[in-house]
Length: 237
Image 1 (cartoon, rainbow, N blue to C red):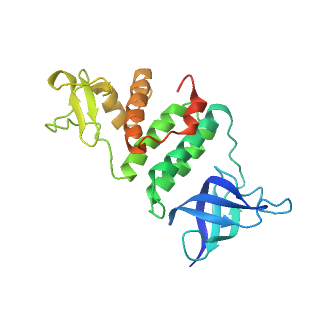
Image 2 (cartoon, rainbow, N blue to C red):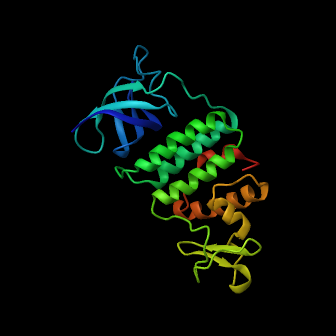
Image 3 (cartoon, rainbow, N blue to C red):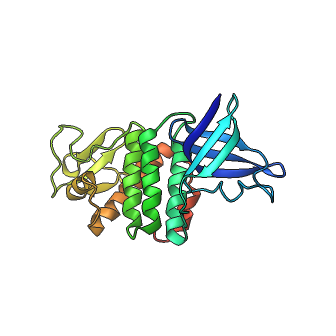
């Protein structure tokens, strides 16, 4: 199989032998896959400066099996994303989420578009946590496990702003006063959930509750896998 002119991002790269490397790539039309890049770590390789995480790329590869060989790579834009500090931690975080929560070769075209948008927002945005929460919600949507942030799981009734709710994995939200809650279940106000449904994270309390909720939900789907990028957020993460 030969693929040409494929929009893609590099999620992770690791050395292979003296001058080669294995690229973990997230592509628009082929999902996540590993690609062998021969000689691209060599001192004279023109690809050395091109094959960087968080840079929009156009790639070409060929070969059968689980690891095709890179044939071509060029930047899709003249501008280069530059991350540092917390913005770098955020970018690494969403890369890890895709690495751990998507299956190889599963196509997620909408998630790819959301990733592209989020990466660009993280460069300049002063509301980094808002961008992370929006990406997490879109990720769950694309994985087929969306959160219904507007209705009760038991009755289907619209959530009430002045009511507290707790979330049951793969079920939904239940009112605290009408159902038994254990200490591991995160409680969120109806007001925050309704604001999240609209993509409105301007209220500090909404951001705080959204963060606790999304961490609890994602931890379930991560199945105990630890994200190295979370260590970079301490102690504020």
